[in-house]
Image 1 (spheres, one colour):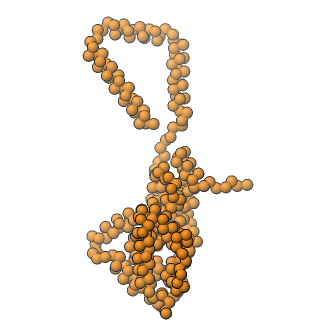
Image 2 (image 1 turned 180 degrees about the vertical axis):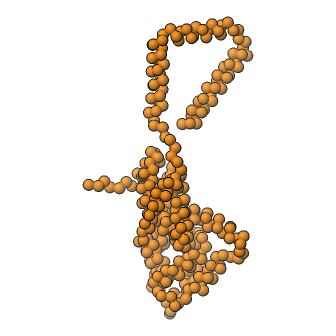
Length: 122
Length: 192
């Protein structure tokens, strides 16, 4: 027993106290051989969750940005053509205010869901 | 020249921050002996059960390592988990036994221990065996308090943390446990 809190037995005939102390001493002195115990524990641990390195996100963003810039430089006319065609389609198709509102709501919801999903994954 | 071994705190930090399983394995290697010995004492020498509970203890420690706030020694924290595992298992076993037999199991076990403590035993290891038998007959709280304070050499405050009970209750458990042990081992008392 911890000597800071429990003094040695005062009575010389306190045989139980002595027996407990002797038993405790033998208990502490004995070493339980590992005998594969640590390996069994490590095998029983839950599977490791893949932890992505911190540099991964900016690296991916940089690669995509570089790819987009490369595409824009390599095919300068394509982006302009796509934009022009999209504008022509939208201008030819008259939209009512509720349709515009609905489109904005759908786009907002999509953005919010994507952001929430990304944050949850992190 | 070999570098000094990492402290428990350094290994815990590596295990938590870097998910370093090698660091945790080193912690298991370092503390397995004391945890298994403690559980062997609590389970009254049932080595297989003690090892199962020790394995459960370390798996739980791994899962909750992030919540370890260093307010106690790592070994004390492990004792706390181990004792909780043992108590949960003991309660489960008691519930299973209650369906089979009535009566107070502790009293019956104590009576058995009393009957077996004869003065004809050889001294030394025989006293140890009788002590182990008598310890097994104590209530869970009494046994756990004695094992933590004597065998694991914890202070009353540390034992209270491990057992999740007030210091006064720990002291009461030790006092009552020792009274019961004295009674069960009366044959070993030196004649006046």
